[in-house]
Length: 172
Image (cartoon, rainbow, N blue to C red; front, side, top):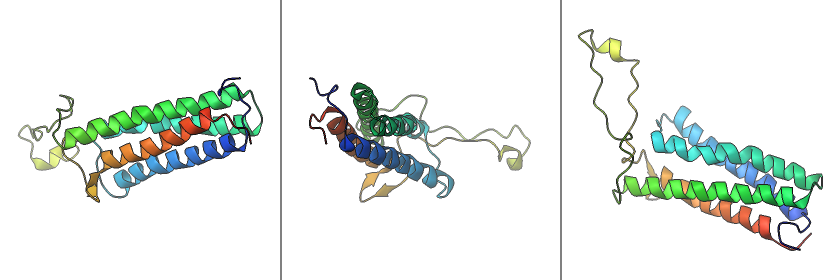
């Protein structure tokens, strides 16, 4: 019996529920900083959220699958996919943090842009023009780590939990 076909138990149910809540809290925090704190996300910031948007419903489905004793390969497979999503998120967070620290260049379409031309109409006409922030400038840092860096830390932890739960052989 491989670890993916071992019966799913309370560990998988609890892990899936925890992961769903933690992923929702992580992306919810990013959305809170955006809508309540006024931090405008750059292109990479928005891309870093995609694994969470996909992961939350998958982890809810994994929790339902474990609780209803659906085939173990489904529950554990969903947890493994959640782990893979967090690996993707970890990669994106490290990449973005490296761009912020100028370790490597970011995407060419994610740099500082020129202020919009008013076309002779005046400054008030350009008020609705959106200027995205540059990917190579951290919007803020907490304990010396940018939002992208904290995403990498969260992704590493959540991915580890997902992989551990997916491949744990012991049934409880």
